[in-house]
Amino acid sequence: MNISIIIPLLNEEESLNELHQWITKVMQSNGYSYELIFIDDGSKDQSWSIITKLVNENSEVNGIRFLKNFGKSQALHAGFAKAQGDVIITMDADLQDNPEEITALYKMIHEEGYDLVSGWKKIRYDSKIAKNLPSKLFNFAARKTSGVQLNDFNCGLKAYKNEVIKSIEVTGEMHRYIPVLAKNAGFSNIGEKIVKHQARKYGETKFGMERFIRGFLDLITISFISRFGKRPMHFFGAWGAFMLIVGFLFAFYLGIDKLFLNPSGRLITEKPQFYIALTSMILGSQFFVAGFLGELILRSKKNTKNYIIKENI
Image 1 (cartoon, rainbow, N blue to C red):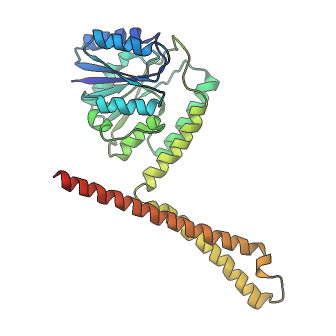
Image 2 (tube, rainbow, N blue to C red):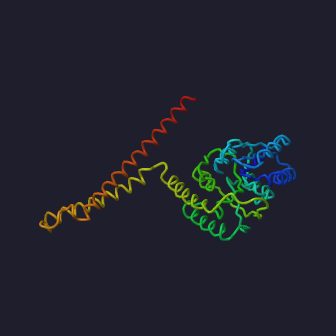
Image 3 (cartoon, rainbow, N blue to C red):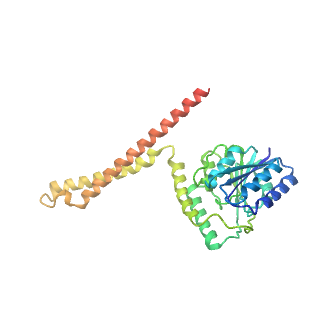
């Protein structure tokens, strides 16, 4: 199978038939063998009824239904697990992603050898205040933090080699950072293509300003995991050592001051430096303990994996 097209959706009953016809036209005109996987993320309208009808009438169409809204990341994860094509295309169901772009994305993966190609909606038809400006700030922070030089992390139109999506796990709100997850998994040949963006034809957007807040929090999480996920002691140990040094320096100063410089002055416990020293040493010790616990957890997981591999052999 050439292509698997994965489309997560929430309450998009108006656009599904038109989107299916458009994709079918593109696939048939290029002679691709393909499958189309709709993931209904807990829709409250007639989306699932329309998907069921499409599945019954078209052998290329499959559907997955969530009983409640779990989010786009979980929907993509379910689609990735089911996809069988050599190249996987993800796109949104609101008709803002143009299916005509699939051909060029497929060629960039299949012929030019990219592991992943991300769409870039250079010209957008969204509200400049509500989406464009926050999106630019978000993408700038994502580039600087992750090291992946993409202009549009949020674009739902992306293409992947099959082995890429089978090697990563998309959880939480990490669908924005699939290129970063792929890079961390060793797939560094990541490209970008300017794609057509279209104004929303039906319904309303399902994402509000809160997605940028969650996105920045997820960015911090994935940045930490990518840098220190396999060596937590490097992070916690460094901060622990710094805090302990600060604490011991203040404690040393207080001791010298009380014994030699000002023996008749205030009690050590009456000085603010005492509490700075005490707090720093407590925090430093806790950082070290957190680092040790992280290392123990990592090693226990590695031992479990080795045991399972030996048992399977």
